[in-house]
Amino acid sequence: MLKKFIREMVETPGLSGYECEISNVIEEYFKPYSDDIVKDKLGNLIILKKGNTGDRKKIFLAAHMDEIGLMVKQIDEKGFIKFTNVGGIDQRTLLAQEVIVHGKVDLFGVIGNKPPHILSEEEKKKTVKMEDMLIDVGLHKEEVKEIVSVGDIISIRRKMIDLQGDRISSKALDDKAGVAVMYECIKELNKMNHDCDVYAVATVQEEVGLRGAITSTYNIFPDIGIAIDVGFASTPELTNDDLSELGKGPAMGFGANIHPKVYEGLTQIAKEYNLPYQEEIHPGETGTDAWAIQVTQSGVAAGLISIPLRYMHTSVEVVDLNDIKNAGKILANFIVSLNLVDLEEMLCY
Image 1 (tube, one colour):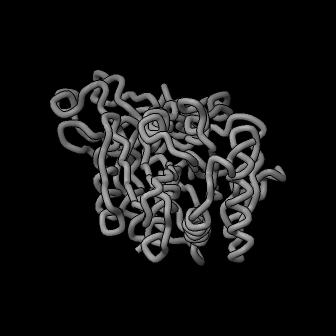
Image 2 (tube, helix red, strand yellow; image 1 turned 135 degrees about the vertical axis):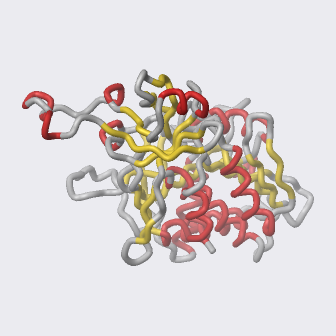
């Protein structure tokens, strides 16, 4: 079921600011395990799993459901579409991609540029810039303009594929992997007794400024808020010791953005239940929803769990399903460990 859920998420378009379709997919999967689901004015999907007592301690989980993509900026005289980015697209990876232009109807297209045979020697040494690429949908200008308008969004067309073992590759695993962690956590909590009310929020517009996390955290104002996102997994050309490894567990963030007691609680649970985990250093801002959570209202005790991911912000991102499953178990058991705990005392510096 986990792989099926991820497959449906990553193959459903969900660009920042246009998350309605992916939100509906996520809602259907969470319904059997939640007590209430609402969408706020910005589009955040707020899933509530009520605690078993009336003490109303609130734990907030956040994983963004939006993804990076493209947007139509011009249709030229020959019917080719020029485009710009929505979020942090790596333009090096765009050439020769298949895309879907979401106009009045969806149009398949391909991103092209001059073939290598007719490039100058100087051009061959340079990366093709996004402004020099075009989308070809196979129609004449008049036909394109009947269907496509400036401002229409464009998503990368890519099916999820199974690699060896428990690894998968797809676009948009940043951060559908985090949404999958919340799904695993909520399923686990349905087998457990937990006092805290748990708000699992699939946030919007993270890729363009953490906007969904800002508004949803302000609305709920939890006792503890934990962001679930992806982190950089090691590859042969990367030697940074701060990178995490695929299949060796989720990475627990610590640093200025993270409350030390939340970090300590998550790592203690991992050790107690013999669940693998790694550590991720964040000297300053994490660049995730954890930053928005921490500085909401008078401040929220924030945590961060990162799923190791290779080739971030490309259409071939890679994760290990075991890291997602283990992250869900750690989160669920951490929430249960807060039963009868005085959170005000626990979180006091």
